[in-house]
Image (cartoon, rainbow, N blue to C red; front, side, top):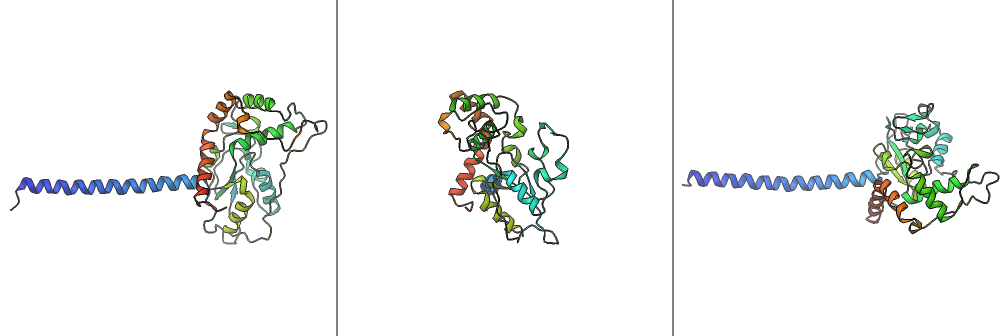
Length: 266
């Protein structure tokens, strides 16, 4: 017969094995959970079952991240009976919303409905703002690498909500965005999102409305095609940019990785 000491030792060994197995399984589950949260957080699940009310009306709220094509979505929504962005009456009035002094529809916001937004490659987004600024009626800039660097140095060293939150990091919005559409494939992702949520109308075509147009007297400065390579940035400007948009850069990298792995349809 087995001694009491040996029996207790065998029991402790069995318990230890169960604990190890439990830890391994728990760790595996945690890793899977974190991976899914990372993938889902970064986009991009626009293909889930439909979400409509009893009348069949699509239940979606748009979160407008500035400089990601949001005006086109707002105007499409208005034409189809959706009060999105600046057409949402609950987002009008005083510009101040929490910590940001911007139009309310440009600020991160929680919604009662399922939400969607558009995200963009961070450096392209900043360049879009620069192009826009070269074409305004009070423009003092033009398409030149030195001017671009000086502008970047100035604006990215200032308040994070400057220019009506046009340069606020996109990651600030993603805690409230259930479905992030990629700017590069905005039309396709927008159509798929609407179809997956029960919209059966014939027209989901977005019209580009934010292309810079020169104000009178600024035709020379305005260049809608103005763009710079990333290595155009001065070293100090690059450090400022990468510090402010570190999470956006990481977010976009995850998106590209998931797309390359076939986790995002394109």
